[in-house]
Length: 335
Ligand SMILES: NCc1[nH]cc(CCC(=O)O)c1CC(=O)O
Ligand SMILES: [Mg+2]
Image 1: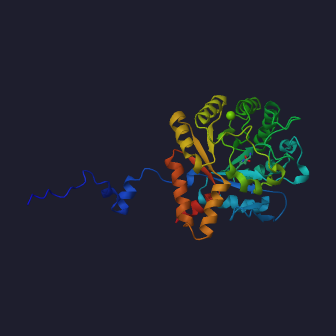
Image 2: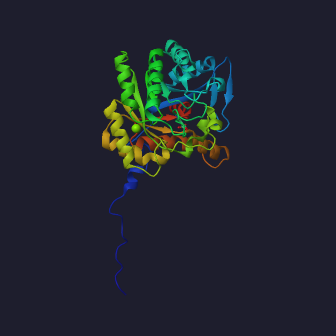
Image 3: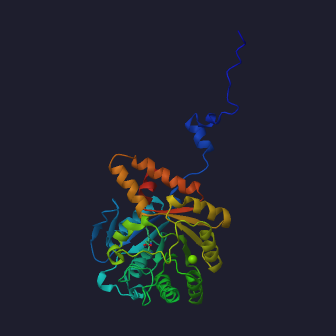
């Protein structure tokens, strides 16, 4: 009979640090706070008008009077910024989207009202033409249907200036035209809007996860079967995102963004590691809809998955996240 060797034991026991809640809290590397949240909202004309966005349970299109209490709630919850997206009356849509330049249009009016009522709440606006164009593209088309860059940038620059004049804090170009950050920054400087911040949608992918958003702003029908592949990035690309971010920083962006979020956390990490600038991610409508749908079926625990998904953004290096869950998350954090 041979001698039995002692039972092998682990050289290391990482489980020691997971044994109690206090140690887990002590060594936790990343946390989500209300400061990390940007809350996207959909606005439309009218009084007392609230319309549910069916593909985004819990999200409604609101008229300004109904948005004000939501903004107040954000202030109470400590959410730093509200991001505005308009659902424009179809009668105002044109091929060139020129309603985007109307200083008394929906967005400038909402910005003025929000800044008057809640001066300490940050307001961010989307710079892109898709809510305003009859074809639903983010820019203007040539006779072949191609989205033309430089003419679009000119209109976008006017749109950004219109928002700045209304008092917006942050303009966020989401159109993916080349050179628009530089053009907007120069125009803002020349017009004396030296404090207006630019959050650039620098690495925005041509994603199928935007579907519910297009329902919310009412562009899905106009867009039809068309896609945005000639300006938004190819989902197969990663190095290209770094080139896009480098360009936008050089052109004057204060903050950059990666979009969509969860399926693109590898890009968030690369951007943060490479540039060390304020980096944001957008947990887009389709990501929200997936979680909502699974939770509604009882397949996922809504709050647990919501919090874990937000933590994943922080772990990937994001400084903040645009998320339709912002108020739910902030409310949960207050408890
Ligand atoms: N400029 C359009 C825009 N701005 C934000 C989103 C998507 C946001 C979301 O899905 O939540 C889109 C959709 C698109 O590019 O078609
Ligand atoms: Mg670019």
